[in-house]
Image 1 (spheres, rainbow, N blue to C red):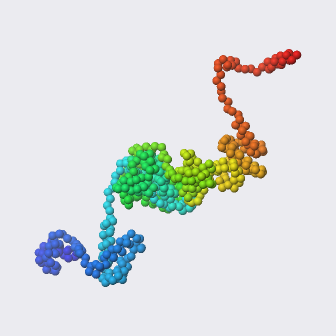
Image 2: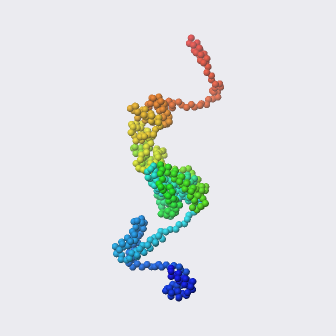
Image 3: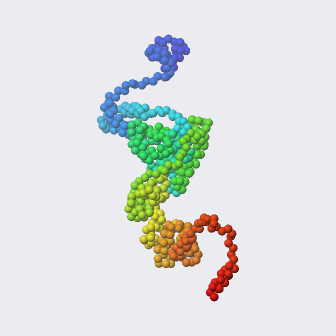
Length: 501
């Protein structure tokens, strides 16, 4: 650079000829001409063809090593010095600098290969939404838990909703869509997804996919088209991918503490609204995301009734009247023992169907080896085995109304208290729990608690038939209201006495 400056000063300021400049600075005339003609201020020299007479036989092995370690964490990759030492052990007799230059050149080529350019995308209002999952760490009831979080983002307004679940299964996908569409107040015309195994059963040529039949029912119900991304091309739904990082930074760092998943989802919903109200829209800077979302709502397709989002699985009923699903067990009516049933799993409940009838419904349990009993499923069995009331697992900590619990305690003085109490419980299926509770209150008030007394109260209350008005012909209707007159009765008595004489 110093020589170039001297050449330029001598020629352009001092007006010296090229021959004199070359002689004084001891450079060739061609060099002086090159500097002056190109207005160069700095000259770089880089060898086009790098000759490696000693390294050439080892470049193939070096390429294999570098390729094998390319995707490893940096701390597990060998340094250039370590690669050089390994080559020396294999017979390399060249210099370290040759290895260093080759490795640096190889890494620059890899950076050029992996560097990709992207085209910014623009979406019309109500045109599309994007869906994705992430795994986040939270505290539920002071217990550290990793939850699966569904992210649904409107592409035009950038409005997002974040919903947490215990699973990433198909029924959770259904529930996330239903909640999001109710929150947004409508549905976009297209949905953009990656190739989730719960949704895509087979990847075909191009954008064609074989989708899960139940998922196709969801798209038909909400009237939107499905677009699947190219495998390993997350940038095709870059908005929601970016939102995953934003929500992780704003919502899950530090880890939130909530009572349960529903409490967490209410908190996340509030945070999504607050973030949208405080963030400027990236392409409409004069508006917030919340303002853009309120304008986009007019272009959304109105939400129909909620989709019945369940995943159905066949199961068998055990001899203990339990159905196993997702490593947990749920009770059904004892009349279904030994039969095949269908388990309809929702995001937060389990419904068991037999011949189109609901034979069991429970809050869904997560984890392993949990049992969910409904004591009323075993009432018919108690008629034949009343002794099961004493130690039966379904009847432990049975949350009955207080009058029934008091009646049970009062019946303990009898040896056959279990039979008597079972008879009272069986009456609930006929009269209803409120009427039976009232009968127990009456028996307790009279200090005569027993099965017979309670059933007597129930039968007496049920014996009085409701009065039904009868339409009489006009000729049979009374014209004057009847008036009580005892003298008529006395006259009848006198007549009776006259006849007797």
